[in-house]
Image (tube, rainbow, N blue to C red; front, side, top):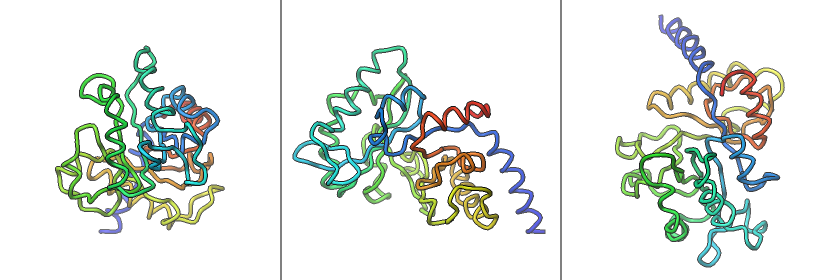
Length: 246
């Protein structure tokens, strides 16, 4: 009986996932040929920037060795967002800021950096959500942070209701659950593990994102996750629009 129930659940929710609108997460957006602008042109739901603290600035780079003068969070993202907000192309999306250094070091600099742009993150109307990933504070304290600060959640964490409200999605490393390289069919055993994670996230009413997943059409075709983590924003957007999933 239990086996049949689980099979029925998989069938029902697989059908539900097939109808779930796809949203695009522009992974390591700053490394793209046209950072910010390609993602915005494709109406990406989420745009990711990794940051390091240098003096009183947040520098956008994948590693400290790759930091380039002028590539601040303000120059690459906040100023362009402010300009965009004054046009009819402005829409609501999230800016995911991945803290590569400690929370205690990075958070005060982030608050100082965001202050001149606070109106972009205010309640009501079109706005940008600031979502923190990477080095985060204790999840028990999420509810203590300002309304404009949200968090990227993790699977398997029993979040208190007030902290869960601060989470925009649940994210996990695909490679922790599957070694599949993105060609052909996902092995059934791996598919079940992936499905279990996504199902658990939907049980707490949160969308799910796999980072580190294969960035291929075979993966996009089989993905059960409503958020596609991709370095190929234009290609992925075109693919899902063609499938009428966006």
